[in-house]
Amino acid sequence: MLTTLFEIRTNAHTPRHLATVEHLCKDYALVATQLIQHARGQLLRKRQGRSQKELQKRLQTLCEDFAEDRRNLEEFLIAVGHCIRHEHC
Image 1 (cartoon, one colour):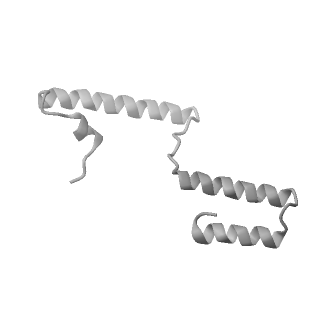
Image 2 (cartoon, rainbow, N blue to C red):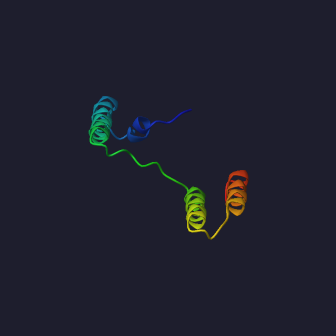
Image 3 (cartoon, helix red, strand yellow):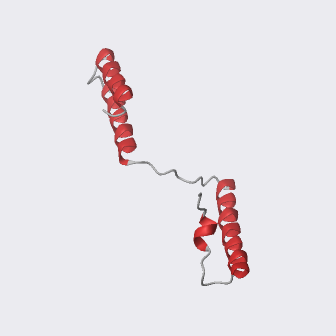
């Protein structure tokens, strides 16, 4: 069964109808805040795992190496190919 944030917030200690209204208000406030932030250009950051950050760092380093002539085109493309094929460098 799929558990929602609403279901998690609702518990047996609060009468069901009061908990429902309270949690709907909290959900509304959360969504309203997110809409305002989106309108201002403050988009939500997606969580990235460590491996994704490491991959991005490695690709950035490869691009810098190529731009500063520490790697030639063939070495650069081989290294990028390894990153793509193995999903990490």
